Length: 301
Figure (cartoon, helix red, strand yellow):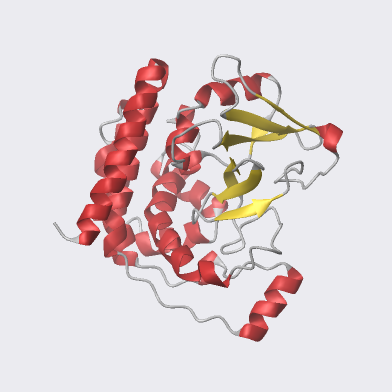
């Protein structure tokens, strides 16, 4: 086994260990966590084979982007490894066929690809541009459940964006980027972390996985910074390790992991699905969520 294989196996083992632990603690989450295990396993397998361009950022352009608050790149401008994304898309479809509620939809997608009625290259380009109208049109034509096609396309692309982020991270000015969107790709955060004794807050990008510093008492969606309108809650049973931060102004919320309260390494998609009970409470209180783990509310499928 070479070093890449060893790294892959170590990450896979850690993920499976965490999923097994949460499944034992919260049996009601077991099915959703099994779904996450399937998706993340395929994405991990795909990553070592991804080919992306090396990007060199001009110093003057970096200064302009920093001053104007632009992310380093626009996702739709990046060269996509269509071959890698297509292979992952098809493997995800095979996994999804095992999920009864969407198996017929996945069959329609597979047949559309085989009949050249669905162009994966075009689909990936539209997904990178977050063209929801295109997704809705194709889903309607193929009679698919809402969100499924975008879910498959987005997760097929995510390892590519993660690879770009790894190559671009050294260009980020961590000391001065305090904005509510990713400094690399401009996407919104899916979760947050509190790190260290000082509880420094970091947002986790929903697209490329990059983590950047953010203010403790500021909404990552509407940027409301009135302390009295920014609140949080957690459950007594689960403790302070996992909590929901809410904004009274825009009525949105984000889930946050306090790493000082847990010894577990944060795997965003796993921890997110492992805390579905917090989403239920937040919705009951009238809050909505901007971004979901894996790009989809699992209740939809």
